[in-house]
Image: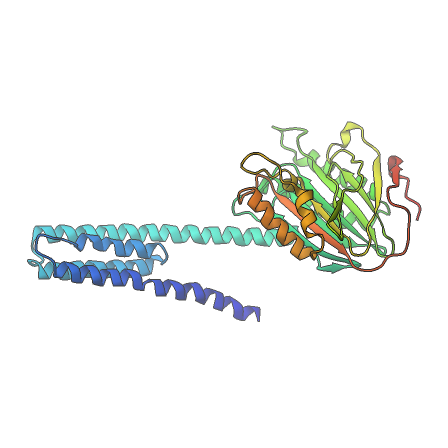
Length: 390
């Protein structure tokens, strides 16, 4: 079925362009008739150059050239009716129109080539997005999931923000992160962090151990590829969560990343308590302990993860986006609908363009969970060896 949709998609723009060619053709006819019936001292022929100029705006160089030839032919017809082709005035008009047509066709070819290059860049960006940011499933374990990525770079679909989710041992592990910088320069580090998470999430039993593994991966990467002109300036924030299938208590470990929003029914929005460690890549500062914070994530609740591109978006007066207050309007919405509302509202607040990449994940818990530990307990992991009792 997909192979049938592609030709149809190509046919539609071509058919639209062909229909629009009626406009320059009609202009040629109208200008020619008007000039022929005008007094000898009125010359409308030079305005025929409008026809190929208009065609170049939506048609390719071939169609533009055909319109230009028709315009030149119309100018020749006008000359025949007004003194013949041998007059100096008509020779100059025909020659000038022909030269301008050639110039317009050349510009149309340049525009079409740049459009093709832009389409190729978009295609590569889309392919890279699917390779780097694997689409999250709509449902995984007890969770319904929706995700959103807004790139700050023009014509880019990916940047330094990242997210991933995977199943392991009766739970869902989720990561959302933000590499310093934006656009293409941050993609390499984002790819490294995503690959490290997808591999390490299955090997380490606790979130502190997982965070330590990610720190080691980032440190090795920076040792090999860190830019010499800005040493020590590369790092990434990350928030790791473990959401059990049969327990309402969710664990999270933050490496310099902001806490999630917990949306409950009745427009209730809370921010779970969080004790973040330094970002990944700054382990050389002596930080060896990560903290596991816990909170209650009950059926019917929605957990909203985000990067700082959301909360740091500014309006025309410099005001930050009131994320928590705006999210409270849509606590009853499905994950996909919630992110749709936030996207529209965020872009409206920022004037249609963000200064930094932004990523969001909405996790809605659907199934009942068994009673577990009380929310609010903080578990400190010394040297990544301590694992919360279950």
